[in-house]
Image (cartoon, rainbow, N blue to C red; front, top):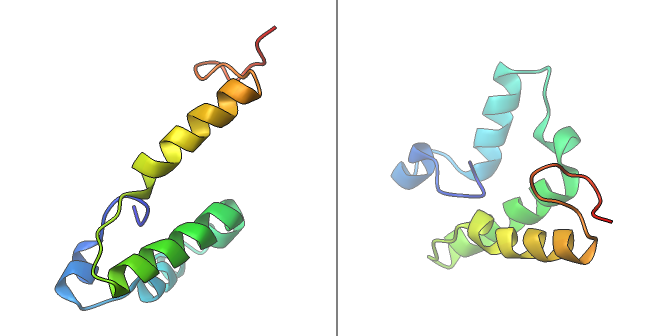
Length: 86
């Protein structure tokens, strides 16, 4: 969610991204956002935090979608199947 839009608690000013992540992980200790997608999570977290401080609203999935499509094309990987083409 933090890659797409601000959580209602952030919009209300009652929480920040860091406190939300800790809250989510405490409710579901079997999963860790950091352990699941470390690099993407950290980049998204830093970019979204910076944009919030600057008063900017950003949807990272819109931006990263184009990079992902470019990568798949360059690596000749089919988007639907995940298999190499040719």
